[in-house]
Length: 308
Image (cartoon, rainbow, N blue to C red; front, side, top):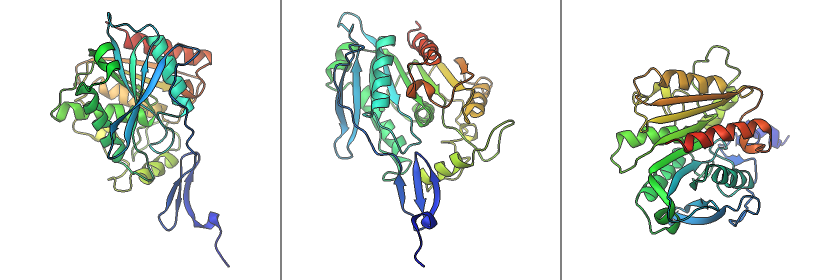
């Protein structure tokens, strides 16, 4: 009797990824592209740039309506979420969120479209993110950066997998030679896990299997890239301000709290901020930016980005 598709599947985690017995992997959500434009509701302008032609690494840039050459603005380098395998800098969810963030915070933004698993398994997304940072700080001949961005006020930010990337880029920026200078990072509902469950932590089995699926050559669930407390360089976060955001109904809430608690006592010398939205799920502020709780979280992030 011929096997069915279900019989051939060894792991499935909607809406992220499906893994088959023969090793094949497929993304479970189709990409939806929305064109760069002038957003009618915020007046924010966006455009796409190619960072590395040979790999296709690219980004979407955002400029607020009130930008002028007389006053340079904070620069936010944003890494989108999606379990390293879905979503993009060009999808409606993140395009709309970046329009809103840029409008509210009055910042210039670069939303990085790193390559994703399964076609490009980790660590490709980390290498692409590092390449994007080098491009930003090389002061390319890009008008929106040269004329409007304040390189003394550069932030990294991201949600879920993007929060994970932001932390890892900040650590890498400390230990590898570069000319990067970050004022702070924002980690929203960061994707961190580990082999040993935390107290009160829910079932993390699916998230663990997701990590193994998107990073087949990983050392496991205690890989420092996904369990930062196992990293001997954990305290070497290359900025002086960190904002950790968690959501009470998110299965990752305890990992976010654990990260925050330990960064505050590991010897890192900086200002650590924390905010919890109790009755909301994972990345609610990106998927439902219209709800009141998302507005409050936006206010907190805007305050962090605009601090002197």
